[in-house]
Image 1: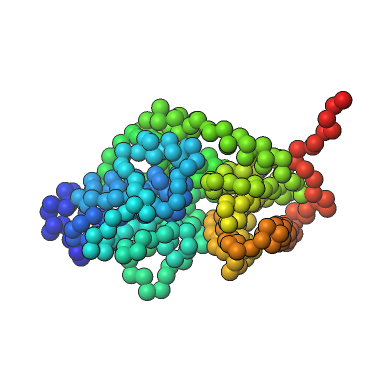
Image 2 (image 1 turned 60 degrees about the vertical axis):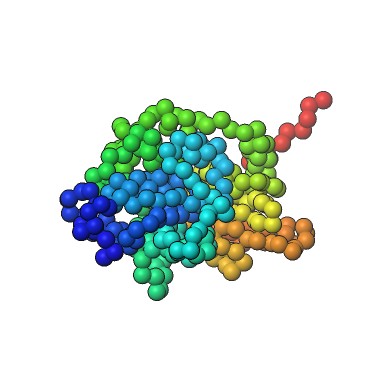
Amino acid sequence: MPHGASNGHRHNGSAALTPQLAALQAVLPARGRVLIIPHDYPDPDALASAAALHLLLKARFGVPSRIVFTGLASRAENRAMLKHCRYSFTLATRLQLGRKRPAALVLDGVPWSGRVTVPPGVRVVGVIDHHPQTRAKKGFEGLMDFRPGLGATASILYEYLKAADVAVPPWLAALLVYAIATETLDFSRRFTPLDLEAYTALLPRANMRILGDIRHAPLPRPYFAHLAEAMDHAQVYGRVAWSHLDAVEQSEIVPEIADLLSRIERVTWTFCTAWRGDDLLISVRSSLPGARCGALLKAVVRDQGSAGGHFNMAAGVLNMTGQSLEEREERREELVRSLLGWIERRSAEAEEPLDIFAHPLVDKKPAAG
Ligand SMILES: [Mn+2]
């Protein structure tokens, strides 16, 4: 063990560690800073979990850490979370590494999935994740705390903090509550008793003003332009609804549209595609218990890009650098057809046959006069 109870200056508690805390302690370096790396373009669950891990490492193990991520956190609600987070976040591109190879803990994704960028020279010593597709990697000897089927990574961090007897400050309780609520769509998606326990235990401790600030963060005007475009492009085909955005700067609007469409009555599957530069982004949602969205999107994207997700939600990206506009549009249409085909087969298995015709979500009435 690199350090532990014998290393008094780093350990100020005397209670015995739970197996999970002991496993975490075992991978912490004896000295120096640890990097905390949430997945790229971190969502609320990744951000809140990173802040919770930062507190845990300091309060329970006396280990200083720095939160580092790749991509942006541009969604208005996510920016509000960063504003209220008392720990600073560093962009991976700005990270200054000395000659030592710092240890890192990866959150809400695995470094071998393509969703988490690990800066060169950084050594991953542990991974904490809840995605059902997550598999252990052969040869990886660090901590692997995988809880497939759990609603949120934030719930795992709640469990660690509780086991370590670390008090959660009100601002962090607000972030964790928001993370669990969004990740489970207010418990309308799959969750476990641990998610419910974390939520109900943290809510009374949460700073409600911060929670309100995050939930109702001011939205930039382009958000509404995307919304209008998405509604205009939205199609319904039986129990499937989907849409497309021609040019987005940030990826976060794509899952938001998929979530919004999933509220159409009788619709059980939704997806949204969008161009972001040379990348085609895809988000899939389903309310069916056996949907396995992550596996479905992986099957559709195959080796042309990367995809991953949960039972009820998944995201993927295809890079089309060097292809003409026609080729890109053709491949997008092919992907839409392929997705519809897979969904149709899944629906047939679930005895939920689709309609024959697709039609626009919003009827376009001819202009008066
Ligand atoms: Mn998550």
